[in-house]
Length: 52
Image (tube, rainbow, N blue to C red; front, side, top):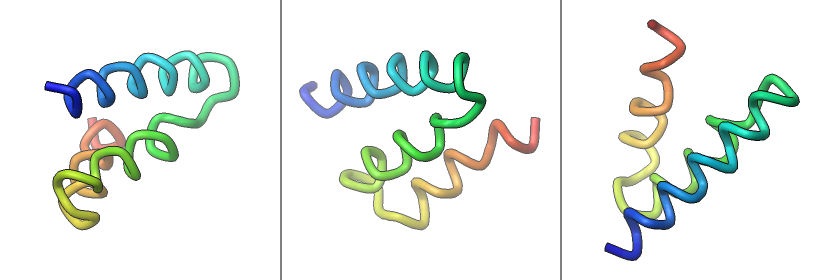
């Protein structure tokens, strides 16, 4: 539950940074996701929006 809350907070902050600066979602979410999922899966998950 704490991990999911951390991901949600970082996602909102990353969205705010990305809205202003044009980058940030991958830079902030990848390390947080890799804590629980591993680096390879975190990078794969973060790359999905780039394909859409």
